[in-house]
Image (cartoon, rainbow, N blue to C red; front, top):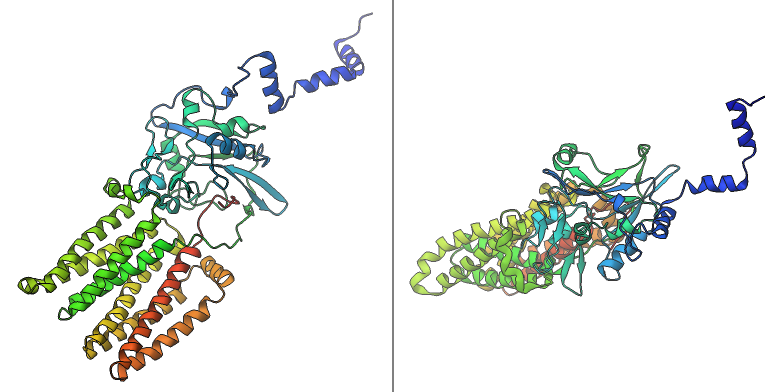
Length: 520
């Protein structure tokens, strides 16, 4: 009598041995084991690691580009991708083109690997004053042109994902280029090859679809910047939706950002110069105000060069005029410098002195336009602490306060007491308005950062303001030279307060990063 099929199946199941179990297990190999098998069989050259199944086998079509796709379920946070990227590209010790962060929530933890998102509308490219970035028309990869870079670091401020990295040794910025040379040869990028769990791959995406999905308020991951700014192309995939309470592991971290001291001094000195030239236009009879303004302006422009890693290439600023506010700022201050020189020259020579008031008026308008371009450099980054309603009053308030305070010293030395009193009154009014304005409009996280990391700032601000008020009273009611020295105290107090405000402007503004990312 023969056994039925079901009986035969049951019998074979009962007769399964350890060897059978091991053979079955071999059919469920991990990514590392499958990779080893390929080399054992000689399917790929032993000296190369291609992983061709993790990159597209065709070139991008019209409207398409390459993009990273990250499988969050497969990412374990081992940082093999970080090491591979660092080794292949010869990066410096603290330079990272790929980082691993973490999302967490109640009973939830998820590591996240991130690199450049090769955005459809890259902020780094649009902000660069010398066009040191290029978005390849065929592949969509955003590449940094090292030989073109002047090291201004504006792309770092413009990128909301902390992608560009500044090299102090080289004096330039560098970033991930998706190992474009490897992709062109049909080989996967270093991070893709190195991941033992195949959590990273390269795919083709449709740019129009990326733009359509980048709606206001939508971000790639919890804690990331809104995607409608630069339209990033990276896709983060997971089988189950991320928990509602998922947040960046460093969401509550408070840190002081880079101070950018050359920029602090440049902004204060140039704004003081503009303020003095505005006073010169209003009081054309006192030539010394314009002379001091010329000196302050050019000191500020000279200091600004210290912020550049490669200052000799700054003459190429005109390349970015179409999109970069930094290019426009350089152009505006260059014109302002030339007209300011003409103003001073017209005041010094008797034959042209009748033209001085007209040139001074034009110069004041150009100077205020230049201050506006300075403000737009930071507004264009879309950081909440650098919004229009916060930055415009700060920059123009500082221009009025510093210009009036410096003008008061010059006017009191020249014996025009009434004009000096008016200037001191303007300086104090501007300072009081700034204190009230900032107390009403501070961004909460920036305020928390300042109070936690700079706890002395509010007390120092109030003491400084009280000192300036007492000195201004003395300057208005005491005779020369006591009034002059009191005006000097008002100027010193105003400059110190502006210096502290500008330091806070840079250091307490939360810089957007990928969630849970590793700080450079």
